[in-house]
Image (cartoon, rainbow, N blue to C red; front, side, top):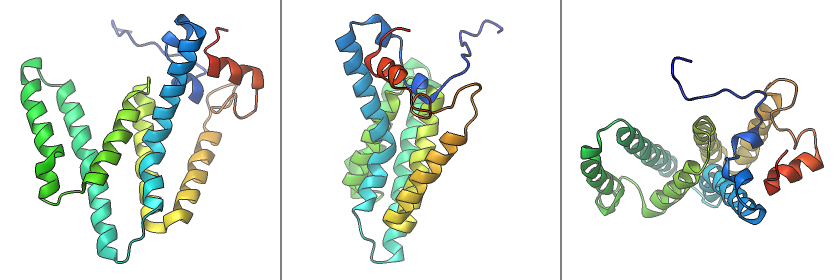
Length: 202
């Protein structure tokens, strides 16, 4: 519409959102490897930080508040840098790179804005988020990660489990037409799931 190169495909399921064109154009072994790496990146982008938080014990409310601040600060800075690189001329990209190094480097850690562990974990999560082929899905995954982080921070392991259950319930209730959004996982279709996992053409 109006010279826009974007097309809308319906019905679109969660597993279709994670696929890319090379999965059907490359040899089977390569497409399976690409699918595995992309799925691993997606899982890491959503669950790495919440699972790591499950291993921590906060003794005071101040420690908890500082941790929440770190998660929000690092994620916000990475998102600001990504948005600024998209909407800025290429001549400014080197300068923005220097700013990114300052904001996400040793200087910010030495100032006590966040710890090195938090920086590494959130950076890995964002790299895993970038391998998701669908921009809309990557943004949804980022919001899901933030929701799980908050649930885990305030209610620890019980909050993580409840957050997972709520996210699964939302996906289960999402309407995408004649099939479930989680198809072929729900309802289970072994043949279609095998096709998606192996990159086999329809």
